[in-house]
Amino acid sequence: MPTFMRRLYLLIAIPLLTLLGAFSSSASVAAPLKVGFLYVGPISDHGWSFQHEQGRKAVDAHFGDKVETTFIENVAGGADAIRAIERLARDGNTLIFTTSFSFMNPTLRVAKKYPQVKFENATGFKQAKNVGTYSARFYEGRYVIGQMAGQISKAGIAAYVAPFPVPEVIRGMNAFVLGARTVNPDFKIKVVWTNSWYDPAKEADAAKALIDQGADVLVQHTDSPAPLQIAQEKGIIGFGQSSDMAKFAPNSQVTSIVDDWAPYYIERVQAVLDGNWKAQDTWGGLKTGMVKLSPIANVEESIAERAQETIGKLENGEIIVFQGPLNKQDGSSFLAKGASATDQQLLQMNFYLEGMDGKLPN
Image 1 (cartoon, one colour):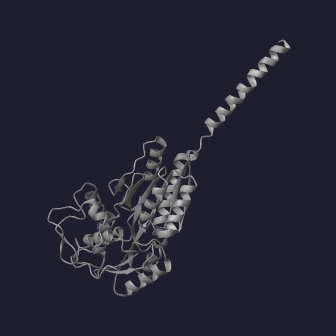
Image 2 (cartoon, one colour; image 1 turned 90 degrees about the vertical axis):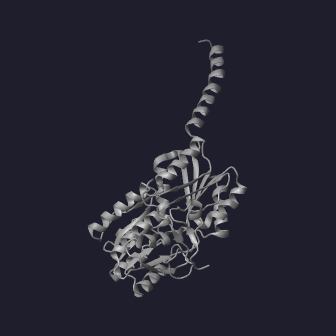
Image 3 (tube, rainbow, N blue to C red; image 1 turned 180 degrees about the vertical axis):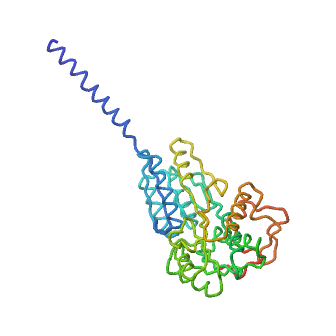
C-alpha cells in the first residue's frame, strides 16, 4: 500500500475505531438504577426491619448489576427521618422505600422537593403524584393466631407487647381479640405499650409483667425476639412478629406472622426499569402471600388444622375479619350487621372495639 494511502487509512480508521469503542463501552456499562431503603430499626432486629432487609437483598439477587441498593437503619421519625430521606434523594436514588408509618409525613415533605424521585411508604395512607403506599394485611394473620390463642389459653388472657398506638397496631389488636372470641367470648388481653418498635430490654420487662398478671399466652407487635424468649423461660406459648423467630424460642413459639416483601420490591423496581411506575396503594394479605404464617408447632394437631382452615376461609373471602355488627369500645356503632369495613376505615382505625379493656394512650 502506498505511503499516502496508509496515512489516509490511519486518519480515517483511528478516529472511527475510537468512536466505536467509546460507544460500545458506554452501552455495556449502563448506570444501574439506584434504590434506597429507610428502616426504623436495626436490620438485626429479627422482626420488621430484618424482613424488609431480606426484601432488599432479594432485589439485589434478582437484578444483579442492573440495580444498586443502599439502606439507612435505626432512623426515628420526624426531623431525623426528613434528613435521612433527603440524604437518599441527594445520593441519586431514583426509587426510595420508607418502611414505617412514622416516615409517612417526612416522605411527603421530601417528595415535594424531589419530584423526579419516586417514593413508596410502608403502612401509611397518604399519597402524592410521586409517593405510593404499600402494606400487608397483618390483621388477617392476627385473627388466625387469636383464634389459636383462644383454644390454647386456660386463663383466657393473653399478654400483648405493643409498640405505639398507630392504626396498624390497633387494627391488629382488635383482629386478634375478634379471632380469640370465636372460641372464648370472654377472652381478654393485657397490654403494655413500650413506646418503641425495638427495645429488647423494655420488651422483656413488658412480657414478664404481663405474665405475672396471669396471662398464659404471649403475642407481640414489637420486633425483637425478647418477649418470646421470656415466654419460653416462663413456660408459656407465644407468637412471633414479622419473621420466623422459632430459633429463639423453639419450645414456645407456635407460629410467627411473616411479612414477605421480596416479590413486591422486585415488582416495583421492575416497574421503574420498564418506565411504567405509578403511585398506587397496595395492600396484600394471606391470599397474595404478602402475609404468611411460619410452620405451626407446640400445639395439638387439631389446633393447627383449624388454623389452616381459617387461613383458607380468609383467602377465599368466606371469613372477613371486620364485618358487622361491630361496635366501638364506647358502644357506638362501627359496622352495621353484614357491612364490611372499607380499606380507608381500616387504615385510619384509632379506636378499640367493644369488649376491649383499658384505654388507648394518646
